[in-house]
Figure 1 (cartoon, rainbow, N blue to C red):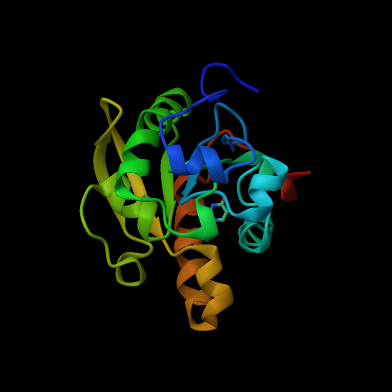
Figure 2 (cartoon, rainbow, N blue to C red):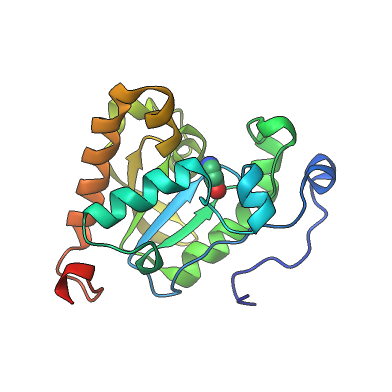
Length: 192
Ligand code: URA
C-alpha cells in the first residue's frame, strides 16, 4: 500500500461499490519507466487485489519475460480500479470518476512511456476515438497530469486469447515499448 498513489476508499460509483470486493490499485515500482494501463479489474484481479493476474495478465507477464523484463520491473494499473458488474466495460462516468486517481499515479511514477492496453485506456488517455489494432505500436505525445507524456497504443492482451491474429500486433507494440526505454536504468533479467 502506497498512500501517495493508492486509493483506500472510494464511493464515487454506486454500481462499482456494489460489484467490487475491493479496490484494485496499481502495482510495481514507483520509479518504473514503463507504465501499463488496462481497463478495469476482472474477476481474478478483484479476488486477489492486483491488476492483470488472470489469463490476460499471464499473456502480459510472459511477453515481458520474453523481452527480459520481470513483471516486477514495470508498473501496471487500470483506468478504473473496481470490477464492473458482469465484466462490462466501465462507463464514461466511471472512467471520469476514477481519472483523478490515474492522473495522480501517472504524475507520481512519471514513466518514460505509458502503454495503453486496449481501447478504453487508449481513448481515455489520448482523449479521442482510437482504432487500436491500426494504431498499435504508435507513439503519441500528449499532456497528462500537467506534463507532456509519451503514450504507446497496444492491443489488450486478452485480445490475443480471443483472436490469435492479434498476437503479432500485441508483441510488436510491446517490443516497441520495451525498446523505447532500453538502455535506461532498469535492469533486464538477462543481465544477471
Ligand atoms: N483486464 C484489464 O484491463 N485489467 C486487468 O487488471 C485485468 C484484465
